[in-house]
Structures are given as C-alpha cells and as structure tokens.
Image: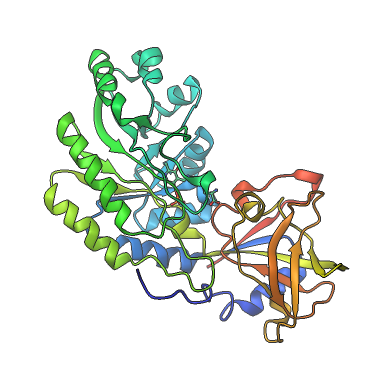
Length: 383
Ligand code: LLP
C-alpha cells in the first residue's frame, strides 16, 4: 500500500481556515465543499491509464457545482434513481455519459430512464421475465454478484449471500437465454463489491473475473468494475496507492485488451473535499464522561451513528490550543446514538466555538434527514 496518510486533507486546516471560521460564525450547520480538492481527486483517477471511462457515483454528493466540476473533468455519471438522473441532466452538458444502476426499482423508473440517453443496468431475471418488451433491441449492462463483498462496514458490502445486489453468476446462463428471447444485447458486465475499500488488488480480481465471464458471452464490449475506492479515515491508515492500482489494472488489460474498462467511484472524489461546520451548544460531565454538545448531529451526518464511521473532529476556533480534555462529541437529537465522535482529545471549549467535522463530503448531506425537525445543513461551495 501507499504512504501513511496525512492527518487529514489540509485545505481546511490552512488556506481556508479563516473563511471557514467566518462561515461557521455566521450560521451552522453548514456543509462546505472545496472544489479544487474535487478536481485534484478527479485528476488523480484520470491518471489510471487502463481505465477508459469514469462515471461519478452521484449518490455520494449531488451538489450541482460538484456535478459540473466533474463533467468538466470528463466524468460520466452513475445514477441510481430518476431523481439522480434528473439532477445530472439539469446540471451538466448533453454529452456526459450516463449509467442507470437502480436496484429493486419500480417498472416506471426503467420506463422513464429508457427515454434518456442513460445506459441501463439489469441485475435480476425478474426484469426480463416480466418487463422484457421494455428492453427489446436495447444494449444493457448486466450486474453480477461475484459471491463476495468488501468494504468499511458490513452494511456497505454489496456482494455474497446476504446482499440484495447483482445476479448470482450461476444464473447468468438463464439471463442470457431470456435476453436472447427478448432481443436484448448484453453489452456490458458490472460488479461492485462495496464501499470504502483500501486494497488495490481486489479491482484486478474483479476485472479478471468479469473478463473471463465476458469471454463466454461474446457480445460484451465493456467491463465496469465498480467504485468503492476508499479514503483513509483513522489516523495512520494508508492511502490507496493509485499507481499500484494502475499497475494491477494494466496487467489485466494486457490479457484482455478487447474490452473497455469502466469504473464508478463516489467517495474518493468528494469525501476529503467536504467538511461539516457546527457550533458548541452546551457541555456536561456524567460519571467519568465529558460530553461536548454541538448544534447538529446524526440529522446532518449519520455515518458515525450508522457505521461507527470515524470522522476527524477539531475545534476550529481553538485549532492551536492544546487538547487537554477527552470528549464525546454529540448533537441535539433525541437518540443515544446521536454521536459525531467518541473519545476525542480536544481543547477546553466555549459555547459558540466552531467545530469542524472532516471528510464529510461523501454520504453526508445526501443522507441527512429532517429528524426532530432540526434545521437542515446549508451547503456552501468554495472555488
Ligand atoms: N457503484 C455502485 C453500484 C454503488 O452501489 C456504489 C455505492 C458506488 C458505485 C460508489 O461507491 P464509493 O466509490 O462511493 O465507495 N453510505 C455509505 C456508502 C454506501 C455506498 C453505496 N454504494 C457510507 O457512508 O460509507
């Protein structure tokens, strides 16, 4: 793997710190997104020489300025719902490639997506058994389940038994018979094992497995090996080594040069580009625990509650003061799970201090809710 990660992406720690303090003093909760970081991540992935096409997994962050920036970098877009497709169609130029990869979606979603230029992914026999006429004469992508999942938490692994995604490889022949019967052409194969993966080698394995399956099918022109590119979150975790990933992919491509290679990263492009700003509300000691309260919690960022995800948290107002206390950083929501960070070393805080939750650009705002009828976080773009 690559070098040890810097403590966190540094744009908020250095160049933009004063601006963030002003934004936080003005109003919280606020998500702030740094477009230069999105572009930098995009360019890093564009250096993957074996990859012919990159689709941004829109679900990670749907802000129109981010969609525009990625379109300018030459990305296509992977969408899982009509809402995501509409967001992309509204924000970016006509020519950007679109991929529609829903799961357990209603028939009407496919009917509507077929009126757009999106390439459509199927992932069950049901769709051809029951709605075959919709897809007659179409070129589609078949999403398969290669029998295993990977990722930072059990809830984000999307393969193997216990996962609802993809057509099991054993059923591919049945799918092909149905496709034949309905005049449907399987032009692509797709697999996505999960999210938050820091092992470069696995994409090579997926690529190889899809390629050998494609050899049996004949009509396949491209292989989509999914997204899932992780970013280190815990201090000391190693970054994905993009040069190593490139070598892995090139070696598979050498064996199967006749297929286009596609990937669909979400988190990698936007996680470090976003922070959540909140303000200190109250403090409390209970037994040996100290609680530091801020004005938003799982309603704005549910990842710590849902996956025990680790997000770096700093008191931006007191970034240079020594961390003398050990705190549970909690929000104002009426649930014990409403925690943004456990056991954090932070300076002594005061009401109104601006607290920054890092690496919140992916799966932050998009997973927020109106729970407890708290104000939703506003989004601000820095460019
Ligand atoms: N492609 C497919 C088919 C997917 O299901 C996903 C993510 C992606 C691509 C993009 O994965 P990424 O590159 O962002 O890891 N809410 C969770 C992550 C759920 C991911 C769902 N699917 C989290 O906050 O960690």
